[in-house]
Amino acid sequence: MKKILAISAVAILAICLAIVGNIPSGATTVDSNGNSTISVYGSGIIEAEPDEAKVCLGVETQSENVTDALEENSAKMAAVIEAMEALGIPKTSIETTYFRIRSVRDYETDDDKIVGYKVKIENINYSITSINSIDCSGFSGIR
Image 1 (tube, one colour):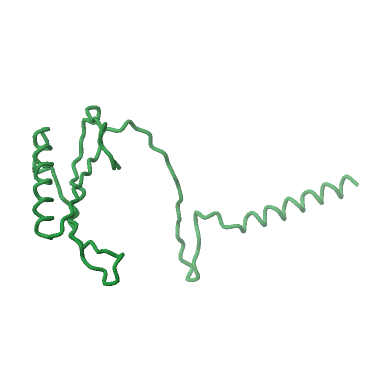
Image 2 (cartoon, one colour; image 1 turned 60 degrees about the vertical axis):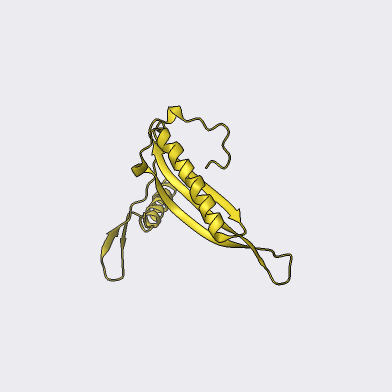
């Protein structure tokens, strides 16, 4: 009886090893042409103290006249850039990445009449490396 139990255990173990041996591990595969490939999967976590912050600012204005909206927006943006320069940020480090002029329509009327224009300059990007001096109080729309 012990001999049959031992032979059964060895047979079951052999079957299990055969099954496990045929399961692809994901590390090496062979395609239909017989070429071998290696696939590697992994993940990692890096923890560090932040040492840089990216500041993104924008100005949006609206007026009935597109020229007025553009001039008002340009004046406001010039004031923002001047304030940034006053903080010691060099003008060469300030980059404008988005500019848009669009019409504003009154969808309450049947003819969708244009009632004004919006000018938007967004994402004046600047990276700050001394983030301990950042004061975000009084700002809205920070992202």
